[in-house]
Image (cartoon, rainbow, N blue to C red; front, side):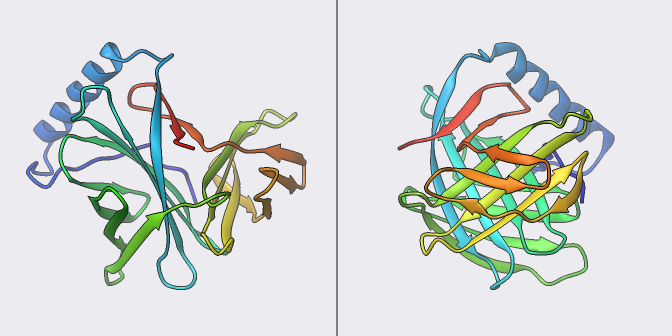
Length: 210
């Protein structure tokens, strides 16, 4: 399943070419103003959606006290490995991509939301603050063959986890992450993860607040 870098559709925008142009201009302005060396501290939240799909959320506040970056990762033990990114100046946001829509309400200690996969009924969740080694982990780079890989893991506070490794956008395997070391053994070597991400909208680095 291909990784979708970001796709944000605020509820007040119609799904038209004009709306797409507005979002493109907003993204361009944000990227132009952003400092890629800026590191935003984020709060991490995790949830079990339905006993199979796990949800990981990171929310980072900008120095202006209004804008927040949001990272969402959905993963199961089969064919779901979806990353969504966005920005909001309010207390809620809707992210869409890869056949899934995620609506979030951002709280200080809990993030509530609803996930709707294409052709399925919406499912609600309540993501709690990650503790200790729990949270949202990522690894990315290139293999010696030049294939781009992205590894994502969601670890609940119970230390249950869901993880997937994609090669050029397709799920390749489901390696287990060692929460204590942040490392995962894969078919092409050991991957080291971090709880940091690059916002594809702005290039800014988002790292979990520890």
